[in-house]
Image 1 (cartoon, rainbow, N blue to C red):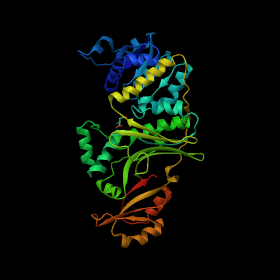
Image 2 (image 1 turned 120 degrees about the horizontal axis):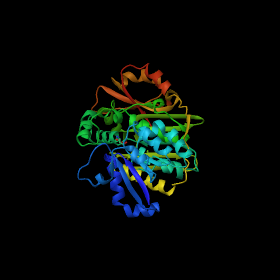
Image 3 (image 1 turned 60 degrees about the vertical axis):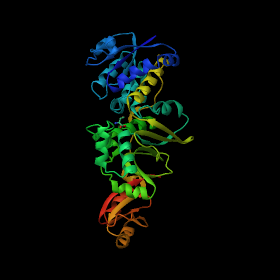
Image 4 (image 1 turned 30 degrees about the vertical axis):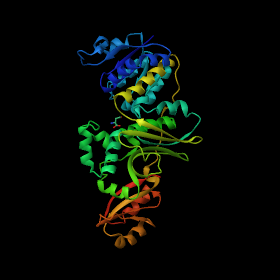
Length: 405
Ligand code: HSE
């Protein structure tokens, strides 16, 4: 029998306990041993909940119990999670976590400590909720050099953009509806400004390219400036607007960004709608492979944490190598990356096209009948720096959205 402890009895923590108790028999069979939740740590009391029998308030009880082999950290936030996880690894316990802030900030260091103690630091639930993506990157796609990862990594923003696209609603209206339904936080900044997706693409890039990527170095643009008018154009040309987190290697340079992008219906991520997440990975020998599913929520996230617990049981005295060095990966300035741009401008195309094409070269004009005092155009592929230079020569630009093929 293997004893484990769960740190935090919030949404994910109670999900971990529920998943283990619901699927106890099959989980034990897959792990090859019986998994026993010996402790749950939380500062609160839960009167009437069976967890009361194993609830502790002092982390030292868990840390100093040599019978506890695996700790599931599902508290969230960097403090005190970092101290708790580090101490557990140093005591020779494996750790499984759903905590993306912790993994993004301290992943390289915690993996090193786990390796030194011949234990494991696992974090499947930190990106894409219930979607298996961390283990596939580490254990399945090992024949490939990963060249590109593109993800819809945030369910809240994907829900908002899908509703705006399908129902023609304004951003503020959909955000309020999402908050009322509990899909968006009362303080939605981390989601709508792209910071959550940024941490996730930083983790995926660190794993894909084997060196530490700081999320502060990734260009990040949220969805707050996307409007219902943008969707009138997008719909007229059969496109959707999605918040992408992207990391790619071109020659010896690495690029990464989070930004809303326009995609057409042939893009594999076009149909990832609502609260779902999708992650498209390109390997140099495999080509494209895509992962799709529930990127958030109590049970999907708990499912990923429990899958790590099973993995930790199966590799109790073996460190499963995860390539993520503490050396920093240099991310190339986004200004040097190239793409097409969708641009909205005020006025009439007939009057404005000469000035626009002088700045941008040949463009494709888009008109929407009901929009009488503006139009849009799509540029050819150019660098972000060249786009900014050209845009500075054109009056009346309302907005621009990057295009991903
Ligand atoms: N706020 C996140 C989302 C939760 O909307 O996807 C999962 O990290």
